[in-house]
Amino acid sequence: MNITGNTIFIPGATSGIGLALAIQLQSRGNTVIVGGRRTDLLHQIATDHPGIDTVQIDTTDADSIRSATMQVIAAHPHLNVLIAMAGIMRIEDWHSARGFLEQAESTVTTNLLGPIRLIGELIEHLQRQPDATIVTVSSGLAFAPLAVTPTYNATKAAIHMLSESIRLQLADTTVKVVELVPPAVRTALLPGQQESPVAMPLDEFVDEVMYLIENNPGANEIQVERVGFLRFGEARGDYDQVVAVLNGSDPH
Ligand SMILES: NC(=O)c1ccc[n+]([C@@H]2O[C@H](COP(=O)([O-])OP(=O)(O)OC[C@H]3O[C@@H](n4cnc5c(N)ncnc54)[C@H](OP(=O)(O)O)[C@@H]3O)[C@@H](O)[C@H]2O)c1
Image (tube, rainbow, N blue to C red; front, side):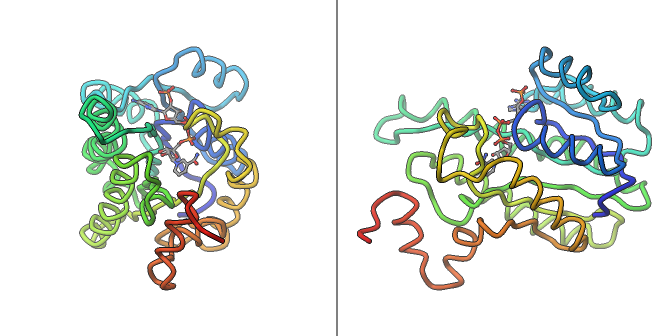
C-alpha cells in the first residue's frame, strides 16, 4: 500500500488506533473517511480535523454496513482502501454459559462477521480501482492466547487466516490484502488498558506503523517490533513460555 494519494475508509475509527491512524494518514495526503457508531465523536472529529469525512456505521448490522458503504462510495468514487478496524474485546468466563455466551456472540459478530460483510459490500468496487488494498486488523493474540478473552483470540486468529486465504484468491486482481497485527496498545479497548504499563503508547505504535507502510509498502503484514514476541513464539520454539509470560504464570 502506498503511503499517500489514497481514499481510505476506516470503519472503527472514532477512537484509539483507528482515529490515530486516520489523522496520520490524512496528514500524508490521503482522503480519509472515519466510521463508527458514536455520532458525538464523529461530529467532534469532523470539527477538529477539517477534510476528514465521517459516516455513521454499526458493523454488527448488515443493513447499516450496506447503507454506509453506499454513502461512502457515492461521496468518494475513488475509494481504494478499506481498513476494517472496528473491534471489541470482552472478558469471558467459560465455566458456565452465562459467563461467556452473550459476549462471545457479540465478539464474533463484530470482529469476524463485520469485516467479512464489509469486504462483501466493497470487493467489486475495489476491484474496479487500479490499485486497492484491504487492511484487516488481527492481533498478537491471534498467535498466543490470553486466557481471559477466548473468543477475542479466536476471532483474531480467524482474521489472520481469512487474510492469508483471500490474499491468495485475490492475487489475480488489483486488490492487495494487508494484515495489521498490533501488540497491546494503550487504548480504551479493555478497561484500564489506556494506563497499562505493558501496553505500547498509542502515538509510538502509530508512528511505527506509518514508518513500516512507508518503508515496506509491499509487506503482507504490518508488524511493529513489539508484536514479534507473540507473533513468532511457535516459529522460535518458545511458544509455551510466551503463553506463560502473557498469562502471568511464568516462574522467572
Ligand atoms: N489496543 C490494542 O491493544 C489492540 C491490540 C490488537 C488489536 N487491536 C484491534 O485494533 C482495533 C481497534 O481497537 P482500539 O484498540 O483502537 O480500541 P477502541 O479505542 O475501543 O476502538 C474501537 C473502535 O471500534 C469501533 N467499533 C466497535 N464496535 C463497532 C461497531 N459495532 N460498529 C462500528 N464501529 C465499532 C469503535 O467505535 P464506536 O464505539 O463509535 O462504534 C471504535 O472506534 C480492534 O479491532 C482491536 O481488536 C487492538
